[in-house]
Image (cartoon, rainbow, N blue to C red; front, side):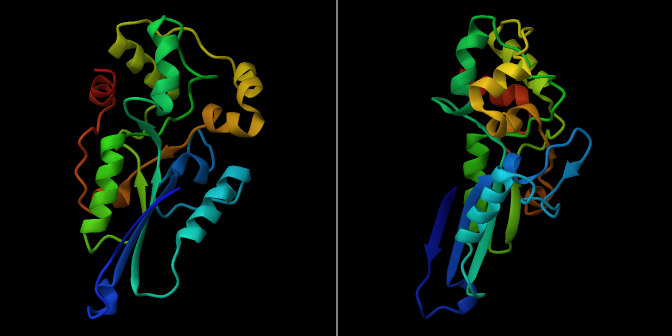
Length: 212
């Protein structure tokens, strides 16, 4: 969990004393489903170890009272240069050994790192923003198989070799494997309504920038 906090002089009205923005993982908060669609008002955070952990993170970041405007950004898989999810994927995909994880039918909520930073900055600067924002791309219907094909295309390599569920479970353990094998369709409804303009709303452009 990351947290940003900005203070104002004590002489200013309590309603603008402080602003606090924190970030947690949307892929862990919302229950995996091949059919459900989740926005910022959807229930979650109480069905397994990781969802309960996110709930505890968000509770720990919350400040008591009404003098602080607070925003929680639930991020998807963050795409950026020099590490993160893409850092682990690039070598096998460059070698032509990449492909979908498990069935590939699971949704894959993602966001470019520049947009995640942009949402956090927007939450700090826009005084009307409050509560939960989903930090995911508007392209919320992306599946894992579609992501694999897009990454292969960006690299000019095939992406046809699936990673079996049993291998994922053996490498990551059952609990962590769930986050890779079972996805969620997460939509940034409140993020868009808050006025944030995405720099990378589409997957192809986001991947092109990341691997350039």
